[in-house]
Image (tube, rainbow, N blue to C red; front, side, top):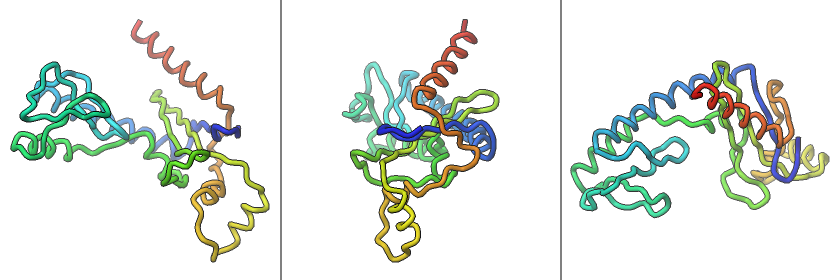
Length: 198
């Protein structure tokens, strides 16, 4: 439901689930590519990524002639001014990146471009069961329905990202749920993983 943290939805059927399966498959290929490069350069198994794109490798003792430290993560990335670094970046760029948030644009959910204090970004999360379960968090802010309707009808009005977002009509397969239910769904998935490992 709606609160200051946002609106929350789960999706178990329809085109979002089919898209989620594609994303899961592409993420597996992507991760295998990253692991292959990690082994080739002698880095640790761990690496950092943002929105699927690799941000930094982990080394016990990196060659600082070839790698520079990434302050944000504490990891290392190859320098682009060396032949070795250029070759590694070329391999990284050849990997097709996929992440759960690809579902946001796929579903037609507006994407907020600026980090507005009371209106954060939309977030998608896929729980990769055999039939994936999709969780969507959408920003929300209390605005008069009258103001929203007036905004929809006025083609000449200056476009407003907040209002564009609030005008979005959830798709029929998007079941609105409470925030606490999101945690329960994630906890249940993590428990299923532990049971498989056990």
